[in-house]
Image (cartoon, rainbow, N blue to C red; front, side):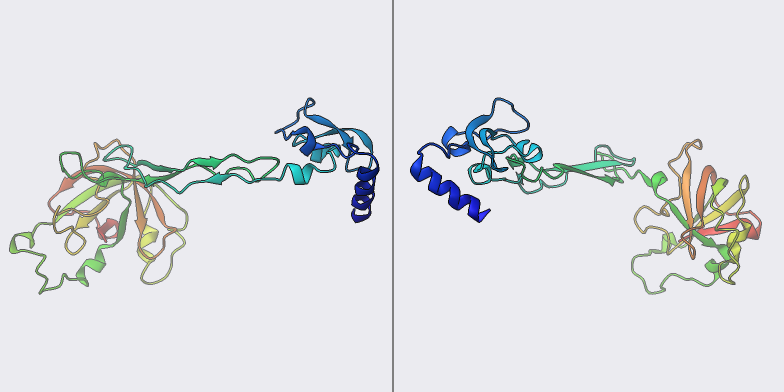
Length: 264
């Protein structure tokens, strides 16, 4: 290539105008443009019509000075905007952020990266400040036997006296579950084997799983109308999970022990 440049420079001194190319013609064109040509030496050492469009790199008919006269410039973008709010409240939706193009790519430069990003979000209050959206949160459950072992901190100032008996029980009818539940045989997770499709199960909501402000447990499905499919996940094996539908809310759970659980 160096020898070619030396030869072309010598030719230019003997024959002015012989090196006419993209720079002299003032041409640099995007894509494939048959009208974007000049007269001069091509990179394949052929003299005649040469091109100054972006596609000449692929066809091999660029003018000798294409790279210098039409340097590749990558796309340049600005900073991300702040995330927007959720598109809706009280149900799973998305938020978005965007950025703009400062400089379009030129002459085969790197294309622009994505200009928009979306992420899932859920807002748990209405514009009036009312609590909502809990039906869409997965319920994390474990065996009710664990409730005998856990206690809320006796000295916790978050719990007033009137919340002592503020618990409640949610009844659900299981609809689906992963096969990983039946495979559990470890002593502390064997209770997962008793999860079955089509059974009514009881899930107790008690402190400390209960929120100190709303007096509810996450994923309790209390806002559901009963036709909505809700999700649950077993604590101890994240692959043991499934769906159920709300049956009703009662004061005390009355299901058999193998079908009695607690919110975590």
